[in-house]
Image (cartoon, rainbow, N blue to C red):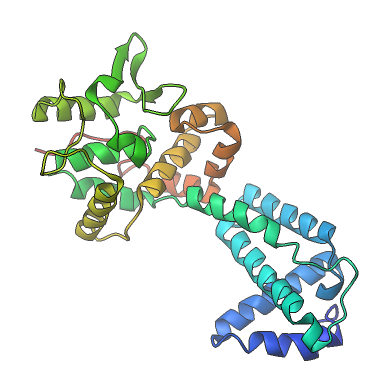
Length: 304
């Protein structure tokens, strides 16, 4: 490494030993790029890092995400790499005789849990893949209806497997469902309700205790939905997506079409603080570009 902010200790003692743990030259280059960027941001050597430096840097990265110039996954990569280096220095400080600043610590570690939670909810499904999944499910009424409830109604897999036909209620302003565990009912868009209604009619389950049953007439479990989605992905020729990712796409799509935080939070049964993670600018651009051809805000009944 050849950088004006890097101390001789960092360049000649720590860096060669740290990089020896990685075989890929691409990985080594990525670590070096992110380290240099961080040092230039705080204008000092990594070993002189303080808590406020990391807090300011993380805030800077988050602002870039909000502006749409940086992906959340890139922020995670940068923070994880810098955390890895800081942790390595702390673990080997005594053995290598490393002198650091008085406030040096792995200040990156405290951001990791939040980044992990954010990643779980911001992984949206490319809109063309959603369309392929719906097409792959057209001959399976139950699978199609489950996809609709995930993507259009924003229900979780846990809520879906516990649904009963009587959980749905028709009112003057539309149809609502009362999933177990939610404090407020979830609105079912008109196009989604048509699919659910068609499923109830075709299967004769309108007066049954459970909405969805497997081939052995047993209520579904989460594993069933996971396997179902994998089979659909295989048939559709797409990567395998989780129920959570498809549900996240619901939140992102609502934002794209102008819903505010309160509306998205209400649809997904989450808090306004949690819903900020769905404000995915790159997903917004993608949908707008392809909105004329694919299944998007509304879903069509399966072809018969």
